[in-house]
Length: 431
Image (cartoon, rainbow, N blue to C red; front, top):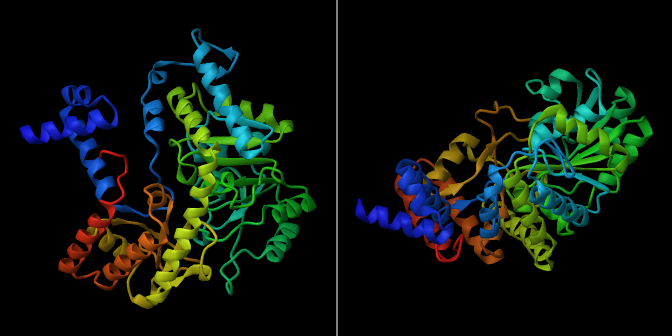
């Protein structure tokens, strides 16, 4: 027990300088944090919506800004003592504007779903027609799914991927838009591995008199790094989370044209939320500065290189990639010919310390709780420093685990090899 306490304190003091305080206040939470550090350090995180932030982002996220309440916006607060909060929020806004070329930015949204809700609240009326990609084709719950507020408050029209190419068919999307005359068209997805033509979407929306909104939560880092088309010049509003490929804290922001700024801001506060999370905004500011550095472009390019290298290995082992490949950080794998479900694959890989998520594929005959596919991504592995050769080796281990999904002995052998590989790429130096 003494050894566990000592190791716990050492890890905390290296990572945050707060280890003793956490341990003395709540040993159970301290041990859970230590266990999560160990899991992240030893395993291969391939969930495309996750990333590992820098120490600087972690420190800002754990700063005293968490103590401050600040309803309102910079210069217009309802509480006193917000001089430094205003500075931080303005800094985050200006950096985000520079990063994406936006006219107006609101960094207060707590996360992606509430941010989408704010955009709809600002630009639509209840019952208006909202057009987005179907969930099981790679869309998001908040893009019109019936169980979401977006499908309950608005009349949802859903487009699908082309059954032959498993990619967006802009001609068919245009035909549907002309038929349904939506008030808003959404682009940007959670499980779509191909580049999106935002310019074409904007033309379709303009032709039918609809707002065009892009949700780039998954690809914001690729956009910031210049390896994916930027929707900001074409969209009325752009929503993105600030984690995932952007490598910031868990949160969101809305970028929009100046003409929509007042509506967007009022929808966020006081429309849908109260005081902003100032410690998160501080961490956002740090992350945006990191993304403005020249080496972030290299990082974004490497994510795509790694994804393509991983895809090449999977294809060589007779695994089918939805749409045949990827242009982004994300891969969607169809397991049908392997006789294994997405749930079974995810469970087997987790035994081997490889973390993915089960995912529906287009026209999936299985329910979302089971699925015929898995979704993989390269943000975390690229953050840790893996290049094509390393990710290819990891791909071989993934295939071995899938081929032996019912063989616990072989899965544990794969686990040892995964941990050996990950040991060469520390999450944080010294840990």
